[in-house]
Image (cartoon, rainbow, N blue to C red):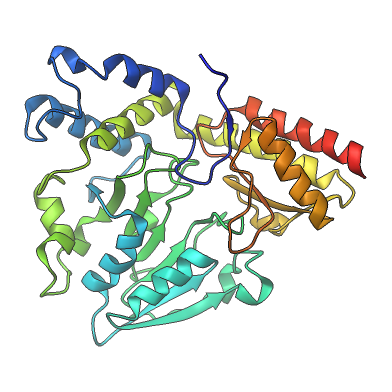
Length: 362
């Protein structure tokens, strides 16, 4: 087999090798059906089993309470930016948005089509280097909901604790850190996430929604954009992304085998520390974008002190088999995305490369 790349892509991102190998073995003849999982009906008994196994695994791994539905949708987190205000932002209320980067900006922009979103906290003036302090977040007791982005892929920041919102539903876009650490699901009205970072390949969007919110949907929402449509049909109202759901279930099985979310979290902390230590011990040769207290365990963003050296580092890294280290096109710099499936060995290899590059060029 060709040597696998050190994959630090921000998404679609690395998948566990064990999952890929298992899928490869099952690709032609899935569970002795004589068909691939991609060929069979989403109404078949075999796929129904796969579908329900994935839901059950996610509920168990994430300790999702019984009063929540798990939905498998399409359209990515970007469609959720629209569906949430379309369904839950009433004309006589406002929705509170906490601004921590480009994705919260996009969510806020979509909400304007349906009502009155309000920015109740923002770190834009600080170039999104940090997460707002909890005491600085002010929202109304009668707001439709409070929305945040739990991890910011472009700027490399992550929430360490979440605001208490009482009777106001807290909604979180967890696309880039879902299942990377334990989360108290009961704090949230809705959690949504594109699968392509920690859960599987692109094409599936997971929505975890509290059942009482389903009873509060706005009227006159198109059928396919109503959460109740999908909740009432177990996410099988129309043809779902069957292969993506199968792969999601296999990734969840892999997380179980690794010891669950708690074990994955410890592994993620160790991986991130390896790279952050290389930055912090470089005497300014490398500088992190995020403030230390807001640093993400999923997306490590940094710059090289000299811009020409930064270009050289990225070019040499690519030649050495490192993939995806360029920062987002909107901000530049460097970014190493260390999602669940990125192995510790890849992070250690990157650290060694960074140290060697510094020694050669400082």
